[in-house]
Amino acid sequence: MNLRDFSNRLLDFDAHYPRTIIAGVVFITVILEWKVFNLELDPGLKSMLPRDHDIVHSMEKENGNKTIMKFKNYQPNVGLKDDIFSESFLIKF
Image (cartoon, rainbow, N blue to C red; front, side):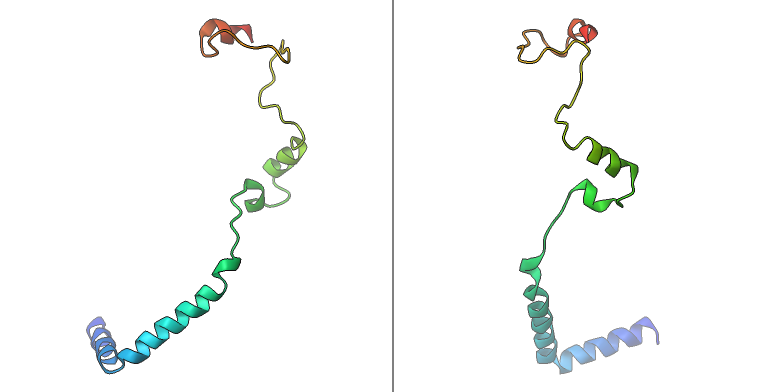
């Protein structure tokens, strides 16, 4: 069967059974909407990787540590007055 025969049969079916096609589309839509409200989205990196992956192990090891960067001479509770993007400031650390 070539493409022309298939398209002719499809158009004949569409012309003879429009209510059946509309009812089928509505039925499929209702079936798919039945569970759509139970869907959950988990965009986390850990859920997409296998449990034995190196990244997952490092994330679990660093899970309790909230420090993003560690500086050599870090003094907590000290405000910064310099521009943090200047070369002189970055050389200090």
